[in-house]
Image (cartoon, rainbow, N blue to C red; front, side, top):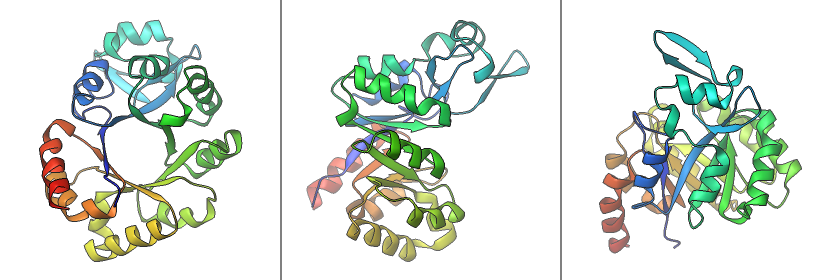
Length: 236
């Protein structure tokens, strides 16, 4: 049995998620970090989950602002990294780059190539078209598809050549624990890596129950989960 990796979800989810402090904290406990990629109005790739942010009582679109404007207007602006910074600042870490927008595929791949980070990166997306585009542009890359609901799981069989499937713990709420366990076992038998991630479930409760069925856990709080992880591995 392979030892599952522990990956920090947006570094550490919360107020400072997807910022340099969150990533620096996460890498002290995790084997890797997960981060989200979006493009600014001036074509820079930044790490940000949502397409918009709120500041001073109004909303701003990431894609409509320059990087300098984001630095000035965003509440976390000064500590939001560019994608290039992530690849360069964390050279020894495994990376899960979540591609949120199709136009960022090629530039993200170029940055990974220039920083010699392709081998240590899985490029994932919840959008099947983006996943297919990644597979076309970089056949040798590790490409993952993120399941975000029952409907997206039905698209999975139509995406050929995937490295990993990123399955939410939350699936227990709509297919049940036993069906989820069967799904994970089936996917692994097909040669796919299983990355377990969390939206709004209690990972301290569920990770121990699914630990032996996955290849990685994308944890909301790797600081807290590391002790659990160490204990579980010691029991195997």
